[in-house]
Structures are given as structure tokens and as C-alpha cells.
Length: 280
Image (tube, rainbow, N blue to C red; front, side, top):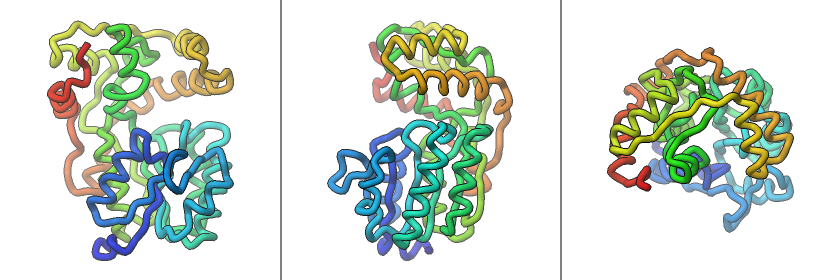
């Protein structure tokens, strides 16, 4: 697959209404791909939890972007990823790009399933997203309570902009040089959750307290919100193991893959302040 043949290629983007899938779908379309947006509400639906949707979603597809619906290290993820990869290869899909998580031991089984699928593969091992602060549960908490209570302690994280992930995914779908590569990707700067919230607070002119809470206490909050017990248990373990400082280092993955620096947290904040994301 080359850049010049993108217009002849159809790519299935799973989780196409999700945090990365939406951006990947838009970037792939701009790059000239025909994009099949994989979601439960799509004209041709795709649902990770309903394998009866997989055949139709993969019909006529040349390449695929796999973003697992819960967490790539979740107990069911490796089995589902392996099954979808096998089905994709059976249906003629040549290339798979998998979104994984850097430093997450439980993600290794899903990564191995893609490597052993028989497809051309690229794996993107991503840091925590900057967009966690601008959409989803963390944004909901900021808006509802005016503060952020989260089990991040004072650990630093090299937050990455989802748009950099999307650019890398499209490059991997387009260019043979990314085949068989795993990229560990981060943003350009280490920030604690406290510092990130302080920078958002300063840019918005709002006082937004950051309240570090133990993972298990956060799990109790999730349970009260109706999150299933098994998911709560997994998330508590995830927070305890992923936010222990072992990912507090920068990489040059974006520079290596794309030949440019990753987007900065400062620019991310500036753009979302201008868009009114954190207004009361």
C-alpha cells in the first residue's frame, strides 16, 4: 500500500465515534482513504461485543484500525482482538494498525495476536491522551464539580495529543516502512495531573482544584455511578499499576515515525480555551 493508492483503499475504523476512532476516521478521509466507520450505530454496524456484525463490517475492506472498546489490557481484549484479526485476514484485509497502551503489561497478549495474525501490522503504544481533559468522564467531572478528583497522585505522564496518534495511524496505513513496527509514542513534556489541571485553570481564569484520591476510593465512586463490578476491579488495578511512575519518561516515537515533534500540551489547552471547552 502506498500513499498514491489511498483513494482505492477502504479502511475499517473501529470505535469510530470514540476518542481516537473519530479523529483517525477524519484523518484517513483527508488522506484519500474510503473510510468505513465502525460503530454500533453505523449503516453497516460494527460491535466488538457482537461477532455477528464482523463479517459485513469487513466486506471489501483493505486495511483496519483496531481500537478496543474498553481497554486493550482488559481480560477479554486479547481474545477479541485475535478473533477479529483472524476474521479480517480471512476476508482479505492486508494491513492492521492496533492502538495499544505504553507500559501496560496486560496489553501484550493483544499485541501478540495482531503480530501473529498474518496481516501486515503496526502497533501504536500510546501515552495517556491530552483529550482525557477535554472530553469524556474527566471533562464531565470538571464541569459537574468544578474540580478533578482522580487517582493520579503526583506521578508525571507524557500526555499525547490524539491527533498525533491519528497522523501516525494514517501514515502506517499508507506507507510500507511502518509495517512490522511498534511505536512507543508520547507528547513532548512530562506533566503531573496536578500541573495539567493548574495550566488549564490558569488559561481559563477558573480555579480548578486537583484532588488526588486512592485508586480504590475512585473505584467506589465508579461503582456508585453504576460501573459493573468486574470493570471497576480492572480499572482499580489499572490505575494502581499504570500510574506508578514507570511511564514517566519521554520517547521520540512521533519524531521517528512522522519526522516532526509531537503537539504540545500548551497548544492543546490554548485551542480548547478558545473553543470554550472548560466553561462553566
